[in-house]
Length: 521
Image (tube, rainbow, N blue to C red; front, side):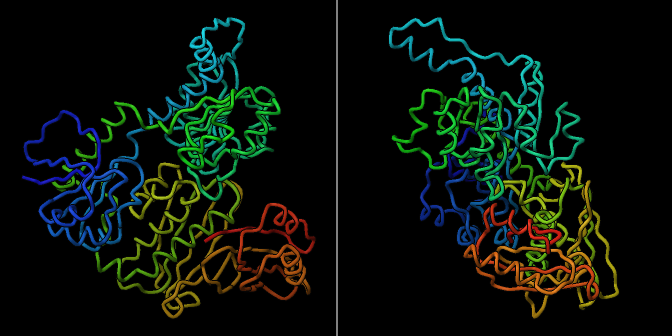
């Protein structure tokens, strides 16, 4: 009989598992967990319990950790892998509930449900209020993942035209959903009577819908954010609502939760609120509990289909401990400097590796997708299936002959617009970028990097440095590469802070530069 400990509140369903002794102890404090975990075969948590190296070491009989939800950021995956403990989660359990809440907010704003309800409670029977129909209107969806895709299906049921912006989703998925996919967010916004966002909160999406974007929407549009606070700029939303450009907004999330009682959006008459309830349905909570328990039991029985950290034994982790972050950095770099929708990625290993270096390709896939997914939603095992889900092919190849260095990792990314490649190696055991496209460089994969392409002429770097200096941006390092004197050249500047859009626009406006790409590693 397997002994399973549950330390956070969740509904585990009515299914009986005679092969399992289940101890349900929500709210267990850390000291007690460290004292008792050694007697259990599996541990099930939500986000409250921190399953760190110390807990895993105390779990001398622990075989599986189950996380009820999407991310596993409260579980030390590497420490679990080193001890041979498998980790599972249930990322899909709340998809329907989150999509339905977004749709409920959209309808509530369009028809004035909250405003009418409040008036009736005040003894006012106001039948003069006129709402909005959805029929034949245009809905814009930012983020066409699981939840965004479900919202698109709802919209089709209301005979709406559905548009989407998601640079990490292949056109085939949009076509399957009957959605028009846009490459330019501004072009989509100009056509949307309703807008809903369903992306993770990353540096790329923070403030994605600001004052400019809100004013690109037609007058009288409705905006819904049931994803993450901060994707829609709260200050800008207040201003645009007050100026009368928007019909209203529906919010399930805030930057700070709970929001301050004096927050201007909290009392705004044109805003409908819920308290971050996307996953809060009886059905979703039952699905989470039932699914994570089922997956933990299946994993205990030897079914590894849902394990997030299979295939990374302690020896492999140790051997590739420096290559894995290098692979992730190269993937992340390519994702940020390559224009267009990814179609295929090729990972090449030059030179002889002691073991099969295939896990490094998983790190590359993880880096490629980190711009598109929320922190904690992707790891070394889930990365390649998630890449396949987006229609992006990944192939690997090994070449025994070395390339410039004894061992080299090369990653080539093909999109619908261009193909770029980067190379990396370990120098003194430390990860280094050693090539971009056909140019040799040597750069530390860390922090903010400007990748600039120009014709090899005197004074180019000086003009770039002057512009950055005028904007108080310090250059921490510089690497140059060129194909031949007077030909095409490339240089990489490591800088201390992220330049604003105005600085980037100024750099791209310099006649001496053909192209400027910004990456954060």
